[in-house]
Image (cartoon, rainbow, N blue to C red; front, side):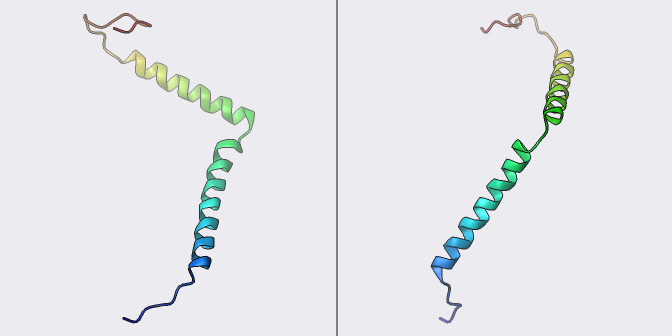
Amino acid sequence: MSGDVVNLRQFRKQKAHSDKEKQAEQNRIAFGRTKAEKSLTRALNEKAEKTLDQGRLKRPGDAPDGEKG
């Protein structure tokens, strides 16, 4: 039963560091954008949603827009 000796304290610190780095990368993507980039993304999403809704088929039993039922 021979194996490598691992220092758990260092392993935990290394894991915590890598977790923080992943979170930092996600934050840079989410919050590190200019106002123009955010508005462009919002406009593209709205356009894609409208295009998708235009292709949706209306069935006779469906509720009108804005109503649930």
